Image (cartoon, rainbow over all chains, first blue to last red; front, side, top):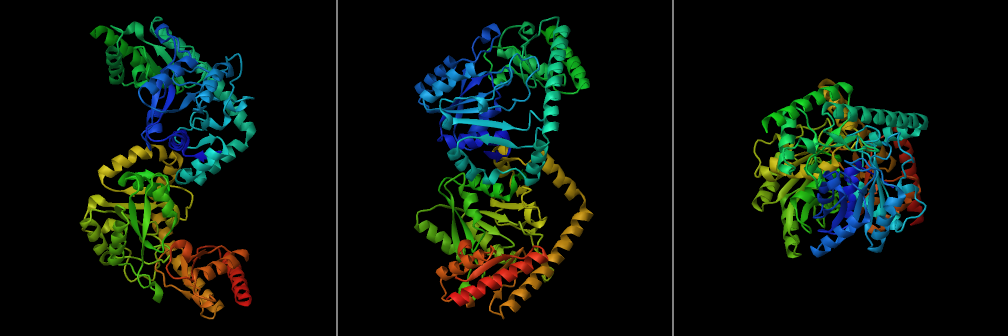
Length: 320
Length: 320
């Protein structure tokens, strides 16, 4: 295990340690595009986007075929694929991928000798409506290629500690040994490590916190979903998430024309109304009209945010 | 200005940002050899040692000629010199370099278009016996090449906060802009940044702390120096430091033979007696027999350390 300066830093380290300059990693899209920076900052590595399937129907299905296609495309472009990055639960969609879903991807990776980086930064932020509990990659009885499977986690999301910057890499001894040499310069402050240690040592508090957090996230997700649907007379279609801090919603019915230009126009109007929500284009979504809203904030902020959103939507409709 | 994950991380960033793979930086020796790691960890860069002058006479003088020689040597070896690293006050010697001493080096660097990284991590740990106050590079009225002059500082030494990991880079806007992009992954925890901010905001406390720290360091330095000299009947020659947390001392009169083999033998005996002090060879000293002792610890530790040292010295003498 390696403790580093946040999940960002762990991804940066892994890109540096596992790949050579110019190599690529496959990632399903839409995705948290800051990862483009993370894999690239110390290297010339980059990400190849593998679109989730069914986006034209409002679906976002993870399937090995999409990685296979990305792999072939990268090879045709003369790029060497070194690995796959899986964020589970996903961002922005908020889906959870179980062992059955991930196994074909892990097997494909093993066959091609690709590294698999599994980023479970939202692992404890799942909703209480799940039929089955979230399965961490760490709980799998069998991994097709354990030495090339790397687990990433950090405190920022699950413990609402954005900015605390303590990330974890769990991997083979070999990778941890090499990563540690580089990580010498990127160790988190001893003071912060001590704080996190004492926090985790209080198991009763931690369990209670995680449980309460899950309950509140679930309650808030459905409450904001409902408010958005009501406010828009059902024209905003909220994706049924299973985890995370986001509402992933289709504003397509508002768009004058289904294009990224119109999406950007709407995005700018929302921004001008004083609300920043990320549009799908920025997150590598294939279909125009999707937006990612953070719902895990104060009630009063949600209230104000919805007012501003309504203003922007009206203005957009009126102007076009 | 860039706030990063400790001075180590700032040096790592600078080596990455200012130089290309395989380039070298000049540094006076003996020196804090962890810098070898810092400049090399993300790159294939390395340090070229430029020995302080007069080591055979127990002197350690900083002079531009030593850098000129190192520069020529590097060029003959086919290496591209990208910069000079100056640690002021110095480690392990504890000397302070004033503007008059540094200016010829800064001018030489400007002439050769070399970057100069000035690491002032002991700037506030100077002794009260100084005739003139320490001059930070930041106080110079004129710099020969300000765009290529970079200032480094951190809380670890001057605020006795080893492990807090907050380092500072003060440089041109251009360098800070580029360093910031990389530094995105290496930002210190917001919690720690907040703590340091509130600490520095209390100027009265900070001034009092720095003053008291200087007084105590000075008092302790001379007290431990005296104890070492007494204990050894003057055979241990303590270098007259002006700053820092170290005693730099010549144990040469104890050595059976003036060689690094004998120095290592003595080092091992001291270690076996339960005391870790760094020997000169590790720090790139040219002359055998020098050791670096940390004196800025509890009285009871010093007392116990001196007993262990005495045991080791007796054993060394008896065995040889």
